[in-house]
Image (cartoon, rainbow, N blue to C red; front, side):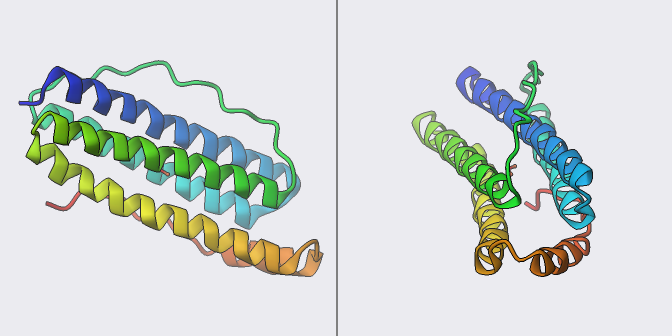
Length: 170
Ligand code: FEO
């Protein structure tokens, strides 16, 4: 069974993961409006992965005899700028999520909850991958600057991203 503190921080993390899904969906709609179908696809796939992140926490709380407590999800900011500005915002958001996961890990140490510490390691690795994926797109965008042809090709590349359900492997 998990402690009240761990239950609370995991419920907060569920909210952050579902907010992340909302944010990526809002960005996906923005890219659709711009006619950038590949960028829209990439962020839409990411939104589905964020839902998976939330659900893995959801299932873990139940498995550990805790109580799932779903909270209100904030409306994402829809003031988006250029494509690179959007990706810089995404990177900042992922860094925020990484910090949040690190706080969960710290609390498991404080609470001597080794099972949750082991569980949260999956998220620590996942965040390394998430930041690297976003950084990869930012590097490409910086390399090509405002070149429309390069943006067109990158859009085609990002159209190839497919959704694979994320699951927590013990
Ligand atoms: Fe679930 Fe992008 O953090």
